[in-house]
Length: 89
Image (cartoon, rainbow, N blue to C red; front, side):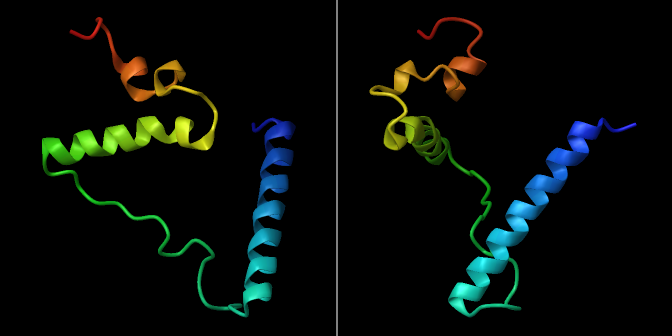
């Protein structure tokens, strides 16, 4: 059985996202033109080590660009920190 709090949370999020989408489409005259975030998110396979390194640098610098930290190394939720079992050489 699903806890009542989960159902309430689901309904609140559903309402917020529905209203956001409805108002955005109404303000931009795009009602009926597909999902709000259609085409925004894409996925491409990483085929080279150099590209993978570039992606990891980008992802790990997001907290810095967002202003959450002054140095990327401080952000403990970063991928390298979370996945590292032994100290880096």
